[in-house]
Length: 247
Ligand code: PGA
Image (cartoon, rainbow, N blue to C red; front, side):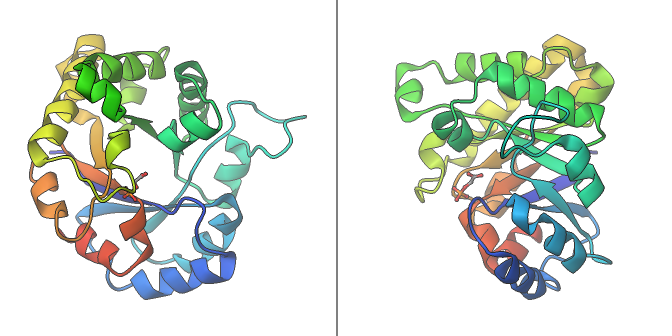
């Protein structure tokens, strides 16, 4: 039985002061020992949020990670720094970073490897655009993102990883994939992992759906056999997040 994982992706929202206030607001609402609850927060909020959630069931994640170890990489944050600050998860390959920061599947792969090497659980994002869905290449595209993203990752590491399926057309648009659409792709991701590593690993890896998940649609999406959790943007910034955790 795979443990559910509900992660918030705060994106570029919340000052450190506001972040602590949000942790306070959500504290009792996200209580649930049967689920992994993660707040992936802006880098500047990591330390205050780690402190704010001490003693609760919440773990803290980063929204990105450098694939370099250290040195002359202005503005980047290394895995070692994240670990020292108390980070347990890191998002990589989010479609917004692929688009605005021109991250490739190869970059994402290096980030996945760097996270795993340092004991950080990767939440590797994949997802198709509306054009790709209309061209009928969704599954091919996702398989490519997964296969390149997991190059050099061992079966043991893959089993501990998280993949987030986030159709780009559903992110921040209020347009959610139907439970059938989401399940179809999440199952295809699990099948792809099974092809690479075998069914044992495929049964262990956790696959999230993301894209306008909210308090209303979460239960139906999370009831799908291959959807093990959610990566939540907008709805992670309000009390609704507690309802999603408990859906
Ligand atoms: P959304 O964002 O829930 O606001 O659509 C999800 C994400 O980008 O991770």
